[in-house]
Image 1 (cartoon, rainbow, N blue to C red):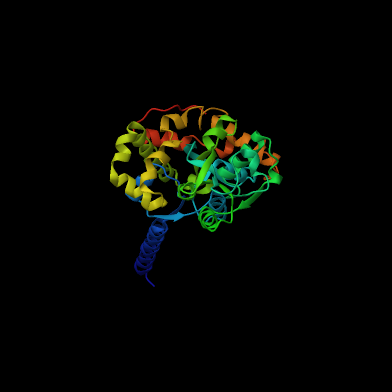
Image 2 (image 1 turned 120 degrees about the horizontal axis):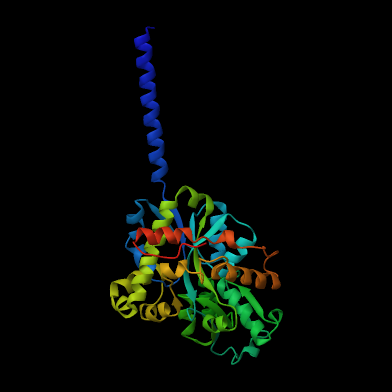
Length: 349
């Protein structure tokens, strides 16, 4: 074989390998990012329905609906989900298990959007009447945490209440059959059980008793390290949706298209959407970066996770409390998102 022919073959192989590598890269980029969402009523559902996340990232996204934070944590831990929506209680439990995750955004500071409702005819008129009754709640959720905190506040031994682990859809079905006496849950189940029950307390009350709850977006650390731009754009779009609502809540809910998109993704009743949105606070990017939430050392979110973990340990729901939850909270994605949207936020931490 001549030198010229050998060089030509080598060059052809190099081109072929280069094309193969390029094709492999294209296949990898074409794989959708899997994101777990829940049926919580919040402004960013509009951005999700409009496909704004896909437009901002240039990446295909597979949105998967989950019924509870515990289920989301399991999927994220297995690697099946890269980004997920969870409550503060399952987040604290996951961090206590030292799962490879980090909080990238506080999605909502929960108030009246989660509540304990007692069924008409159950015989429950005051907290003490819960003793011996069947109370349903999704275990290791924010409502489970709030229920336990409420019982402690009222001086009721949780062991004397028949607390049952049911998912939201199961709560609705059990309620309609008359199988349970009360339930602590969020919408759309909350709206359905309110139709034949009365409010006993809400997470807004429980927060004043020293046990606030919040929802958050989390990400697998390995995914965040490899795809920082995607995470920053995800946070930016979410933050901008919150800012739009916060700027003029009345105009936001007066836009029927916004309400319809939220209803489609959550199953909530359209008439309830304004009240449900008002039942939580959706922090802006500037608020996210402040010491009250993701910023600071330790910031408010780290402190909240620590306090939640301590309570869960006291209740026997986790085996240990970590000395520091700081590595499970990151402000850098909010800072990058703010920069991308031209906002100035705190950079300390």
